[in-house]
Length: 487
Image (spheres, rainbow, N blue to C red):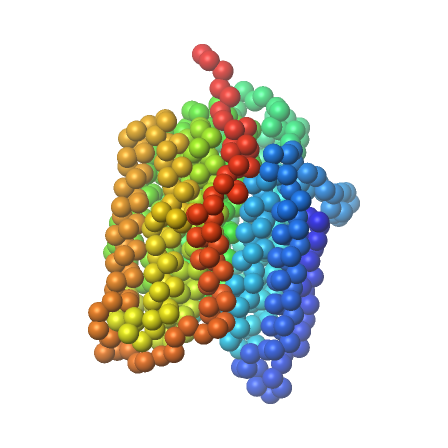
């Protein structure tokens, strides 16, 4: 089944790319056949991943599958955590397809093809059991993102943003390649399952940790390596922002979970205070920057930096509750952040063609349904109880408290600041009298509602019943605790 989750999106991407332009002499019209194929493929992908998720044992060992590569078979496998991330990746395809429903066919089929290609590469990264294959998939995701931002972004500065995205993440990933080569030189293998049982010298672990850490800090991102993210989000088309926030940022979370914690336990214990310090600085800085932001998409992007900083705090808490909470928060962010981008970068931008927050006011009087849906999305983003974001944040910070009360207290300031900028954004856009710069526009359409509501409903459902995920996550988190020998 893993083979299908990788190969099927690639086949769909190739088919969509070769689709002839519809609309005859007018390629500016949306393409009906293209959307039909894309929707059918996204639903098929969701159906396949749901079957696989139901067949995955939350308490079982990793399941392996072979995928015939060039010259030799490649081994892929899934445990419960990687299966959840693959499910998230496939679940987000349909909202991204719906976000392109009204896009002119000339760019619609290209963007749809890029979405499916990126999904296949992300699925490969989440399921591979080899460091080299992970690195190749990790880097290859840059190509569709670069094209989406550089060619189909909605700003004159899109080329610069695409270059920042490409250069920052490529430069950071070169350190990962250096770490993989160093790991291979000391062990003779790049198989993740084998390396989990190899004991490396603590000094070797430390320099390998620096290599992997630099690459994953850029992709997370952690201050001061975050510059590329707000620019990329601001200039990316809506599916690009959803893809970037929903799954691409999770590659860093998964990299720490799969590549670093099981193989470099001594180094994780040694560098944990430094990593937590950087995460706290990133959390506070990004939250304060969000309060000063005047661009709706940049505001959501900076909030993503803050949420991922909490994820990093939990991953390096060396506790079951902290690590499982970090993984849960990562999944929660992958649901609610794309929903917010749909609201501000899709619904509002499509009607008024501006991302300036000061332009909006009083949307509740003309778009009441949008205002209610936007309110639920904002509440989930700030971590209000009954949302899965709250469960993940609480558990991650509770795990951090077991190590450092100061780190937990400083990390908790992010929740307060998150409430500040989230409520300010909602009140500025929705409350008050209608802005004189706005005209009366239609409320949420059926397509827009179908795009955003499943993400919010899933966020609330998992917030009420988080145990459906936590039981399996806690089992796997217990195997990641630092097994550091006493000195």
